Image (tube, rainbow, N blue to C red; front, side, top):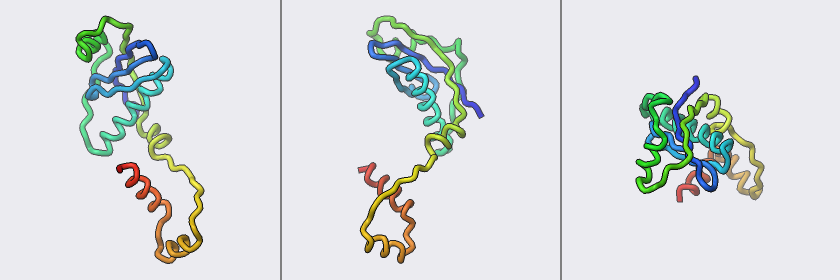
Length: 141
């Protein structure tokens, strides 16, 4: 199922900033307009995927004409001068995107000492699960 939300694109000196006002000011950026759109799709997919996983309610998307990018820019930074900005609808099939980018497994080849391999096999340890748990623990520290 396709999810569609409006996003404000702001031209900056080094690329574009993207804000989703309906989604708690979710933001991303890109060095080019193409990259900003790709990052907006990734950002939107990740946000919706996480909300669904956590059973959080998603807000109803605003209409394209209901978003004023200059008003959003002033709300974010009241002292900023007017900038080049526009609103565009960003759409993504979250399930398909998640399967390809968030849930896709990748094969890794690694080496461990033979004695460790033997001991783990004797204990019936799942190598993939153990590596995932160790990496998650390491990333949290």
